[in-house]
Image (cartoon, one colour):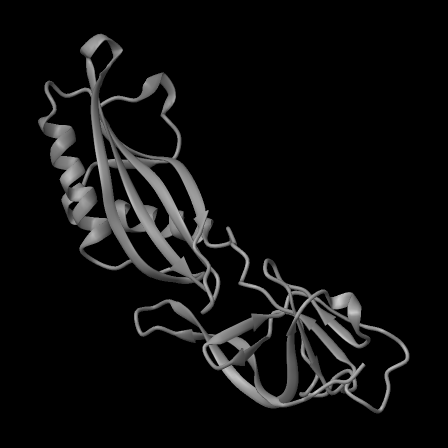
Length: 243
């Protein structure tokens, strides 16, 4: 099988860098330029090192390198080919390696990840529990025994959707923050809801995992509970995170 190593591929390694606000962002550091061949198809068609990614398979062939060599790709590294990126998820080598190009990769768009969920919830909790406009309002992730009294904030349901693209992995988190109050009328709950929106949307959050691209308000639903004795407002927000 003829292999044409006619495309320069930049091998990159992920690294965490300080974002200047107490958190970190993921950056890609270029390590080596490897000449290779990029062909759409299944990885089983050629010998060498196989690198698997999610979606749209491609085969990349580059010259083989010994284990430990900076020219040997590793899982979680990626190849950069112009505006395209090939994220490496797994590497296996077929024996025997030859003196000719013997590396095989499979390319696809980056896979969705849920690894920033805890970091997002932690950042939301930290922001709301220390926000000046919410002094005296408890922030919890479970309804207190007896359904709770007074006014409190409940961190509620969440849904995550894949938003990966050719530039990297990404995910959109839709999450609900609820204000529950036994005060008469909706005014106390609405005042707390307004502060929640200010706290989350006006000042960017810092995550320990991933990079928060934006956080926006989506909708609010207000309703009466317990035959009208309590009020609840469910605020839905959308956070987009990249890696």
